[in-house]
Image (tube, rainbow, N blue to C red):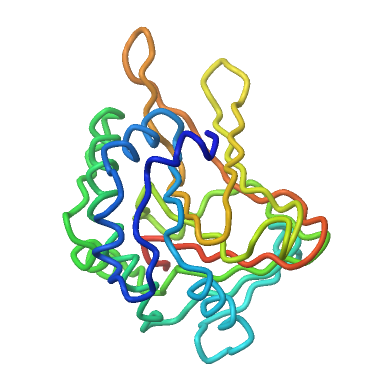
Amino acid sequence: MTRASADFIVGPTSADTSAETRIAAYDWQALTNELDSFGCAMLPKLLSPEECRDISGLYPDESHFRSHIHMARHGFGKGEYRYFKYPLPDLLGGLRTALYPHLAGVANAWNSRMGIDECYPDDHASFLQRCHDAGQTRSTPLLLQYVPGDFNCLHQDLYGDLAFPIQVAILLSEPNKDFTGGEFALTEQRPRMQSRVEVVPLRQGDAVAFAVHNRPVQGTKGNYRVNLRHGVSRLRSGMRHTVGIIFHDAR
């Protein structure tokens, strides 16, 4: 997917615009088509540069976070990230709540096509209650930081038996100004075929919604299931911050 293919999917970027209003301003039929076709869809200019700086500026302040992960210690790659604790910062909490209903419709359609019985409720609070009833109570939105040589191995963010099948990442830094390298990439494993790679050309404030684990693909004999992983290529220079919005909570 190129930036050109997503240029018509534009929403407001003012810091004064509520999360619900700015999310509703996108062309969700076009975004749904992108998700169905490629497993990912860009939301250009979701955040303003000022909002990006405000969020990335939270990273050194431990009071906002519940845990700090160094990727190399766990074989995840090289770099670090922090999980936000509840209550989330207002902007991130608002975006998580506002994005969920639009993505739940896509997720339910995907499950139906893949023969999966799970049906997600219309509002995020109801889905979080399901997570908490299943013992998944820890917040999952996270802030990632990369410096030269850092990378994120291909992975899936699954934190328990309940996992919402779509998540969102927002690039907070400006490519070729704040950093070089560090491209966001998806791989898609297809049955009896070689894997497909999708590199998403994000700019500062752009978001990408993407499949966490599986998605359906229409074949000549009906729908079949593909397996996706995502990661970040090696940072060449500078510093890169990204915020990840995951809709299920962790055990």
